[in-house]
Length: 178
Image 1 (cartoon, rainbow, N blue to C red):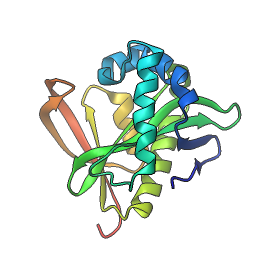
Image 2: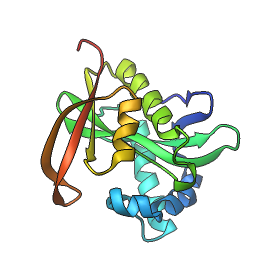
Image 3: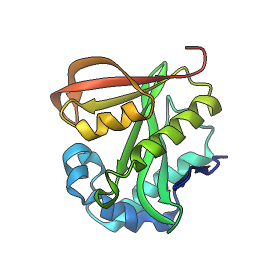
Image 4: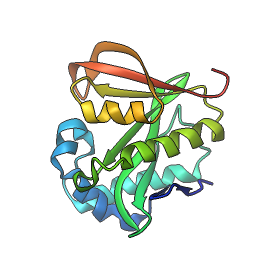
């Protein structure tokens, strides 16, 4: 069972099917089109199908090296879904964190708050030794989120990223036994 994670201003919780319209709207924003084009949806129906898949992952035995664990980022005061944060398979010694916050809410610390909540919880819950973060080198806002969340840069490399070769920064947050 995945518990709801709480901070002063946010809840990070499992998605509900009724969140699909908020995720569809988020997917249409310029920042997602630029940085996470594989999460841009053609319609609300497509967003619903993706959420159904993500929700189905909650009932399985969670293994972040094999299956994604993606959660909603919700403002506590309004109960409004403003983004998502999650873990996806990356390497044998740790999953990769991913996140997106609606443009209207950027610059308020919500992404770093959500990434910290999830990564700290996941390290303990799944006894992880490492969680990675991979960002395009020119995506300054995204790598600052990782740095504010306790991730340390481990390398800068050219790699295939979103379908093309790009300069990327690879970060890691160390967990249990590291």
